[in-house]
Amino acid sequence: MDYITKPCIMTAENQRKMIFSLKKAYPWLGVHLIGRSLCQRGIYSLRIGRSENPILIAAGFHGQEWMTSLLALRFAEILLCSKANGTTVFGIDTSCIRREVIIIPCVNPDGVQIAINGIDGAWKYAQDVEKIMHSSTEKWNANAHGVDINHNFDAGWCKLRNMEIESGIVAPSPRRYGGYMPESEPETASLVSLTKLRKPRMAIALHSQGEEIYWEYGENRPPESERIARILSAASGYTLVENSGLASYGGYKDWFIEYFNKPAFTVEIGKGENPLPLTDFEKILDDTIPMLTLATVI
Image 1: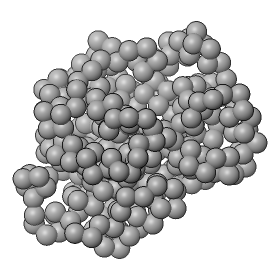
Image 2 (image 1 turned 180 degrees about the vertical axis):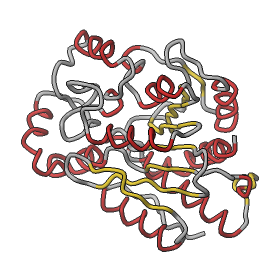
Image 3 (image 1 turned 120 degrees about the vertical axis):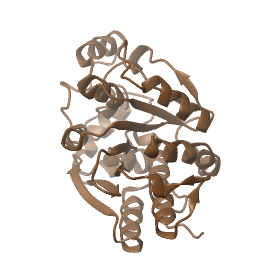
């Protein structure tokens, strides 16, 4: 098959082209603007199937992790093609997917653009981003405010903020600064608003790297979480791990578990140094597509 979602660096323009090319090829794909970033780039959701008890899969939280956006878009295309042609995905009959699949390809489009193009990707925030970059040697993961979106959700945020300060993270930074309050950033607020509106039965946040799956939030383990986590692990070969340190609070998975008491997972795709090379993409597909497809029918 000649895919629309060809492996390439996931600039905001490439993502937008892929999204609307998928819409053109599969008119029954729902494409919705759920919000805008600080730089007014669109944050889109893709919706596949009937509007009922959905699963939500989100990607592109961190600038250096743009391959997660490519994976999310390719997964959407694989599902659409399978449903259109009546074919299976890794032996899984997608006609069994009776409930909606919601995919957010990129939660943090500004962060991705800055990670790829430097300060030019920050538009009117370029001077601020340049100052932040000059004060740190870290690679850029944050949004255009220097806020790490996956530290900005309202789940143990105050505890996380104290941990950040103890680690020397006291101001906007390329990574790991959680902002001045939870949900301070439009990117975070957009995803929270959509999630509260649609009330998914389960959520998966795609990150890189490590070939790992996080499935708990502190002592909070919603019913069925461990069983589903073990299924996802078996399907992908990824290791189940527990949160620790600065990764313990403030993330989307953490907020979802605390707010809904339903299963949510952070999946760290691939292995190596971010940004992962495009040459790793086919292996990542082979590892994760069976897992993601199974997740839609659980």
